[in-house]
Amino acid sequence: MMTFTFNTVPSIHAEYGAARRLGQILRERFPAAARIAVITDAFLHRSGLLRPALDSLAAHGWEVTVVDDVVADPPEHVVLASARRVRDSSAQVVLGLGGGSSMDVAKLIAVLNGSEQPLQAMYGVGNVQGPRLPLVLMPTTAGTGSEATAVSIVTTGETTKSGVVSPVLYPDLALLDAELTIGLPAAITAATGIDAMVHAIEAYTSARLKNPLSDMLAAQALRLLSENLITACEQPDNGAAREAMLLGATLAGQAFSNAPVAAVHALAYPLGGHFHVPHGHSNALVLIPVLRFNAQAATPLYAELADMVTPGAAVASGTPADIAKAKTEAFITHLDGLIDRTGIERRLRDVGVTAADLPRLASDAMLQQRLLVNNPRPLQEADALAIYEATL
Image (cartoon, rainbow, N blue to C red; front, side, top):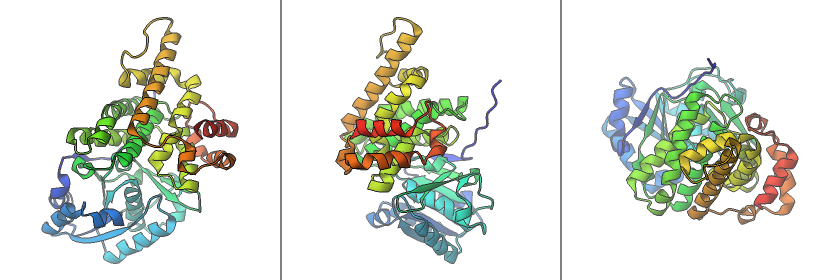
């Protein structure tokens, strides 16, 4: 019998329109608490999207402090300044309400205000020591899956990122309200949706810690995401598609929090660091060439995933190896076409990358060894350079 450990968020509540009764939901969950800090970004705060949630909190007696300093790829100084504002508010509960960056910052704020451990001591795997404040995460995009992961990513230098990985970062409650994602522009829907698909694919093929539970979640996530991505892009008000995308992103988050991601993310991070390409878009740019690189080692697994997203597309004849190879090609071709249909930019040159930049990108990708060790096929710097060249 195989040995594995599976960890996940202890409670998930999915409800269309949950933000409109957020105060009641949290009052039932935390009856003794009175003060809550809402961690978000300035755009969401100004847009009015959060107004129903904030009104509901106020109506149920919550004293609310909104910290809207979060930016994409949040740097250390933003995390620390936000944590100080929360400490000054004497908040008893932390709510991360927004995209992946807001939820990542909320995780760290909950720890920084629940213990005396400095942020610098938390980087890496399993280094969070102290307790944290009660934590609730509520996504407004269907992509990062941060509401169901034990990971927070921080920008620690001009172009570098570091991760905090610890079970302490799992929230007490993940709240899924697809109404918050209604009307998202197609470009954001595409980038975040493809990001979630990458999470599912890389979890399913991870060379480390892959297990039956992560496989089940990853496969179901990929099915939901692949079947609904185009509908969500083309029909931004389609509630059923939005619900499927949001659930798929959360399931993928549960999967990769246990069976970690690999080379797609390793090659995507330098694009974000140097060219400020949004994380989901970075993943979309390198996904297909990485899949083709990995196919040599991952064909049996890609063939299994093909049955989830392209049933019957490959010719079911020949030797088992021939069938698996045909299914793998159908899988990659299907995903390639899916990305094309979203209209998202596909080439590195479209986001400002030149041929002269590629060696630096390849060198920086090699710094992501915590991710590369999970790749089903060993990837060297020359391989990374070739992938970037194929994508230019």
